Amino acid sequence: MSTAPTGPATGPRKRGRPARTAAADGPATRDRILTAARNEFARHGYDKTSIRGIAKVAEVDPALVHHYFGTKERVFEAAIELILAPAMNAPEVVHGSQEGAGERLARFMFGVWENPATRLPVLAVLRSALTNEAAAAVLRGLIERRVLLRMAGELTVPDPEFRAQLAAGHLIGITMLRYVLRMEPIASAEIDDIVAMVGPTLERYLTEN
Amino acid sequence: MSTAPTGPATGPRKRGRPARTAAADGPATRDRILTAARNEFARHGYDKTSIRGIAKVAEVDPALVHHYFGTKERVFEAAIELILAPAMNAPEVVHGSQEGAGERLARFMFGVWENPATRLPVLAVLRSALTNEAAAAVLRGLIERRVLLRMAGELTVPDPEFRAQLAAGHLIGITMLRYVLRMEPIASAEIDDIVAMVGPTLERYLTEN
Image (cartoon, rainbow over all chains, first blue to last red; front, top):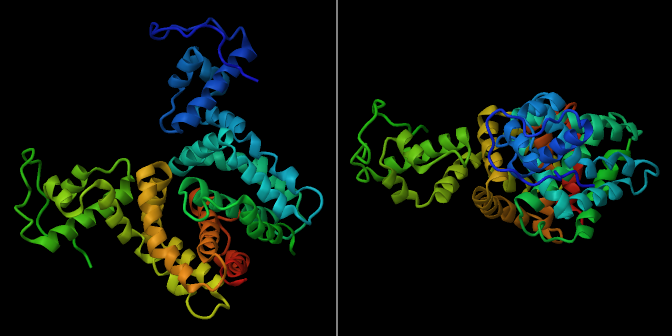
């Protein structure tokens, strides 16, 4: 799974001099940059992450980051596609029987959030989008294309995209109170108790005509 | 209503020298500091607002800000109490007839968000809380004391605080998608269409045993 650099960490080097003659090793270099980008965005958020910083962690010349990904927005897009991968299967979760679709979706999304290994990077992405317009646009596009449109495709209700957004909005709001603002009692509530209340709501949005 | 300074704006002055001999004019000075704090936090968010910056806008010595409010957290608390004032009446909205309580609450909260004069400062507060732990703690305490506990007091359901938070979380999530991430179609949907879907959900949370 890991695409971390295999070479030893290097000290400061001369400005503008490529760390590796790379581009030759194509996919491996691209993967290393992407891993570095994912970690940098997850740790520092959009505003405080730079192409230069990513290049430094990946031990490549900044020009190579531009070469493989273009702008900072596009590196961010590729990185959050990795970060949000655990949540990308939401459309498959509502596929099939309408009965219980709301509960399945709620359990799936809380599963993503309950795991710190996925929660913390997802939180960083959300924070970036809430505080930076460019990051918000990238996240919006990705969620629309990869989650909401596909989820809407599984629904047989009127205005399926609107319905998918009502359901997503509900889950996002609950996760905000529980995991970000950590308001009690919802922060310490049992997932089962939350799902028992929220599941039927999601089901109504996703299935009721 | 306005508590803006009445004197002309002054140019740069010597470090550490109080702009006014104030403290004497008590409430007026406190009000001027509070107005400056509200504007600074609404414009720049928690991280980028300083006691010194507030003092500069209010044309007082920073020591006076400390004198009236104590720490930055406490100035923030007083400022967001002003900023969130339009939303503080939510508990009164659910008071009375249980029927229609969900729709009344949804309409009330969308009214706050639809008005740019209240939406933009509220957004700044929310962003601050999502990106800064100290700001989150202050907001959490204020919303708990001033909104959720009072709203829970109006409810006759089991776990009224949990129920109030489910309702609040739902509304927060929808406003995130609509006003912050601006996802379509929910960003351009008619308020009536959103209320028609969300109102019954809130009602179920607030009233169903």
